[in-house]
Length: 245
Image 1 (cartoon, rainbow, N blue to C red):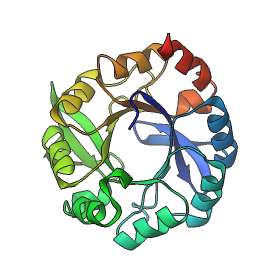
Image 2: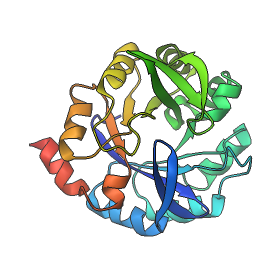
Image 3: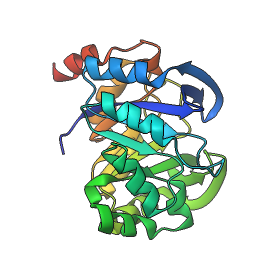
């Protein structure tokens, strides 16, 4: 797997891309297909699609929309939200996704990653963690869209996910989400040094330098962002040129 991937994230609700801050105040941004085509043209390395209310509303993902997006995406494409069963994973991969992102289901059943990795291969399983700093340098995992503290230590949870067969981790910092003040570098570095699988930094990108910090100081293998790309504050092509330089 290549290092230093730049990954736009599309949070989708009711068929539209939306964005909030710290998982709240969610507003509609754009049509997903329009953004997907732009990001592919701009040189994104991968894309992530989250159906952000599928889990909380206890419903299936929008498979038709996933299939439509997959047709437009010649780069690796990850789908998450509302995945509860191995059949759900099969449906998402059959619709054209390259990988699935697991979060809520793993909190309910930690062995689900193992079952999924054994059936589909660990390279198709992304372990997504929503994390908050509860006291200085103490990070815990949150559930239900960042509203509920599970009390689980984030480092231990990352190690368990890796041991159970996750191929990579997407590390979402709730404290930084939508704030545009930079990634949570201490958290990202701590998790990246603890595990052997790739770690993708998520939450906090506001300017080009933040991506460099995540990939160097934060030791992340990739950097995921949403609003800075959605609102044309950062162009992916220019960002990648800056990082190459």
